[in-house]
Every structure is written in C-alpha cells, then in structure tokens.
Image (cartoon, rainbow over all chains, first blue to last red; front, side, top):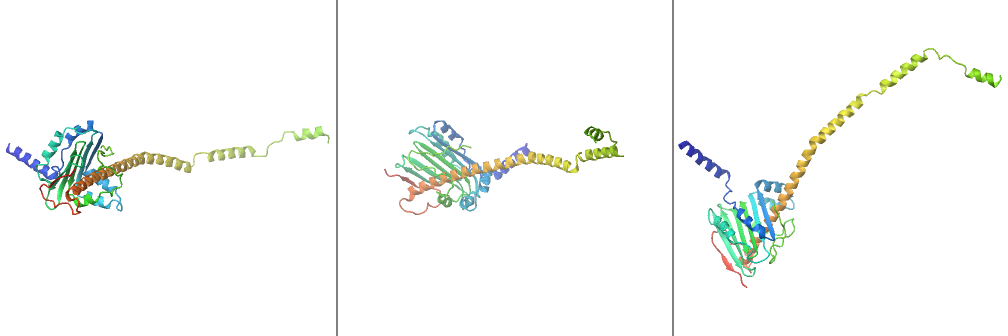
Length: 187
Length: 119
C-alpha cells in the first residue's frame, strides 16, 4: 500500500517535470462553443513539434527574427470569433479562462478598456518564470469579437511586438472596427 | 541456235555444287543461333525490373517528402498568423497604455494598469 502511494507520487512528480509547460497551456476547449454563431473563426493550435517543422521551413534571410522567437516556444494557440451583432455570444465562457489565469504563476500585466473600440477590453497576462516570461496570454473581448492568444514558452514581448508587419503572410485587417479576421483557419 | 533450243538448254536441270546442302544447313543454324537472347537483352530485362522496383520504393518516399513539406508550410502559415495576431494585440494595448508618447511597454511586473478609453 505504502509502495503504491510512493509510486503514484513519483509518477506525478515525473509527469510534472516532463511537462513543465502544461500549466501555461490554457484549456481553450470551452471557447469552441462560440464557433457555431460566429461569422469568422480563427483556430490555430501549433505545438512544439509543428513549431519545429515550421521553423525548419523558414528562410534564414526573411524569417530570421521569427525563427529566433520560435526557438524557445513550446506552443502557440489562438482562438478568435467575430460575430455579426452585439452581444451575440455568452460572456460566461470567458470566465473559465479568467479563472485559469488567476492561478499558478499567471500575473495580469495590463487591462485596457476602450470606448472608442466599441467597449473592447484587452488583458495581457504573463507567466512568471524568473527573468523572462514563461508564457503569454492575451484576452480581447468586445460585444462582437473574442480573441484569445496563448503562447507557451519563453517569450520576448518586445521582439514579438516588433514583428508586426514583417510577416510573409497577407495582412489580416484585425484592427478595423467591426471587421474580424478575414481568415478562417482550422487545424 | 534457234530460240527453242536455247530455251530448252537454259531450263535444263543442273545439279547443285558439291556440299551446297550442307552449307545451307550450316548457315541456317548459324543465323538461328544469332537470333537467340543475348547477354545484353538479359541486362536490359534486369534493368527494367530494377527501374520498376526503384519506382515502387521511391514513389512512397517522394510522397512522404511532399506531405511533410505541405504540413510544414501549413504550420508555418499558422505560426505566422498566430504571431501576427499576438503582435497586433500587444501593439493595441501598447497604443492605449502609452498614447500619445512612444515609451515602451511597462516593465513586466505583476499588477494592473487600467485605462478607460476616451469617447
């Protein structure tokens, strides 16, 4: 009996050590409930394996900054939903997410609310892992849009910000009022 | 000599030279031996088999390489889209927090900085 308990404890500790990034990885499954009523959906899930694969196919000349950024990451997860009218979604689904972000080493860095942007509320959370953030979560919600970004791994925020406009992908007009992401991406 | 006699003489049977039949048989045998499959034909056949085998093995490998490349390019597009969205969100926060100055994001310290947007 004692041996069994010891083995269980050891196994739990081993699993915790083997997956240190698990806590930074938010459970986003609840957000899937928003998809049926949404006009546009962005659903990106890139784990470490796919990040490595993607990095291998990035050119050193054009994507050098992105490649450097990806080396320390464990995963990138994005969920975005845009609706045709105000209040078309149940805000309660975001509560589960906020609950997850109140525990562990998550710390809210900033929250902004903008009347100009139709009451858009934007919060940035960082996973405190010593010198550098071990993860990032961005929650953006407005009456017509929900966007959640979860980056797992050591992230350089200044570098991430500076990447804007450097990508070799079409420019998604995400900032435009009332216009959600023009891409419907699903994995 | 009248034409009739000349014709009869021209068509009169003549015995073949001695050994003619043997020479004909020998030649027929020699030529039939030459038409049998040679070593070069055998090599050609094996080369065809090898080519078919190579195609059968290399085909799936080439397909796998193509699939991997396709997956990688899809992953690359997903990563770039995700980073673009994250970058835009952070820049949006940055614009609201530091507007109109251009100082960098606040230091990474747990806490709240809230700002109401102006109508």
